[in-house]
Length: 80
Image 1: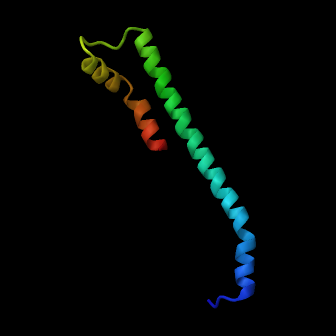
Image 2 (image 1 turned 90 degrees about the vertical axis):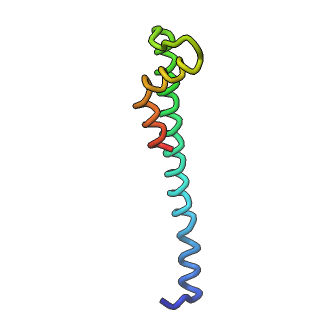
Image 3 (image 1 turned 180 degrees about the horizontal axis):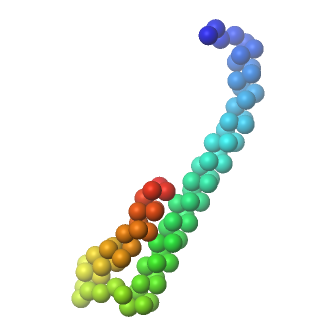
């Protein structure tokens, strides 16, 4: 393909639309990540409030919490 002035001008005129579409994709992805993180935080808070997080020390409680929120953590990782 030969690059000429008309082709360059056409591509430059198309770029703002392509950039806008890419920006919308990034914004949607960021919102999905935030939604997943919010879901994880809500689940953690509910587990603490319901007394389902057990352990004598912080490390044991954290391990318990990790096992109880595996699905939510996977959702966050998938969205990131």
